[in-house]
View (cartoon, each protein chain N blue to C red):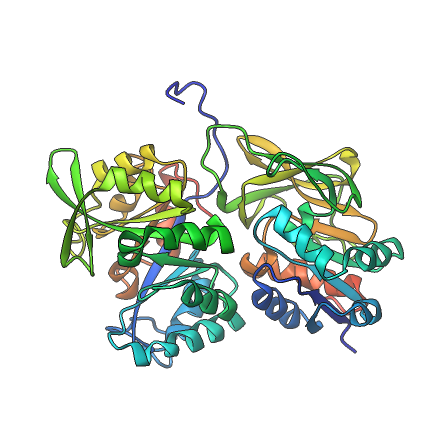
Length: 212
Length: 262
């Protein structure tokens, strides 16, 4: 049986592409903001593009912060994408200082170099802390493969051991983090061609599905 | 900013973007690929380009009648089901609800030209609502004097009197996350991009610039990316008619020290 995956709908982001990619990767995908559905699924995905403050506000309004916290704490596989990665952190510099969900200790910072912002396009992802193998995030993917990014802020976790890959955009930043069953990526696997789909497959495998 | 020593480098790849002109739901002129069942079907062509290694895709809707526009939404939705690289849609976007419909259908970005010039607040509102990353301003530029270009609208039919550099900066201020810059003098000539224009705009703004108009040989793409300082190049006919494949284009660029995704 395909694992059930709930893509959390809080009104931001390209939910359709994320869902289609997860379905192609073998997930039984539903898009929902219902707490019951989130609790009963094998895995959850927190997508998102856009402003940090607006994202947090929408999550609060929909009453989703508590359930996201409790599901991650209970060890349910969770995949955060882009803004869905950033909102897991303690605080963002966007609009001064905006509090996040504080599930991962650390800050979300604005790029401060003279390169163009947003950081937009395909960039190399360099593995850190052995994130491959046994349904690891990057299983079946070559080190320094290209993934698609669109963002102006990046995450900086307090615990460097959580960083599963880095990417160079003037400065080296954390392009993905792994904390037990919580995977979170700054790039967009749903827009990163076959390597992106492979991450989706690896996530589905983590949720109890089969990997090739 | 002006000190080249201090300018940081990055591994970010330069993007190669095929553009499909879509009219009434069909690709105009068709595309000369061997493995296509229907050379006029935008979804099939988009999927073929994604397989071939294109970094993004652009659909330009040149449908004249408003009644036939919804066809594009259906195409975008079908594309999003099977093509997993970024998709931009331009043409005929007049209001916020047009943008929201396209994004919901699965487009990643929208591009506006005439409507941005005539109603700049649309760019501001769209950027606030959907984020700057998905709002592209398309600029059609025509040279008027050395180092001077004028903005044209309505597919190049109407002169606006607006200076291109001024407008490029203005659209970024309003909230554009990217600029799609077309040289009207070079478009369709296959004689190379307007490098001077591309470099002038790219240096004037803090957002990525996609160069368009004039691609005929691989060296033209290389020149736009290094001399022209463009972040991406858009081309149609050189890819559609099989003059160069995406793979050979990228190999050539890599051999010439341009970072590309292969």
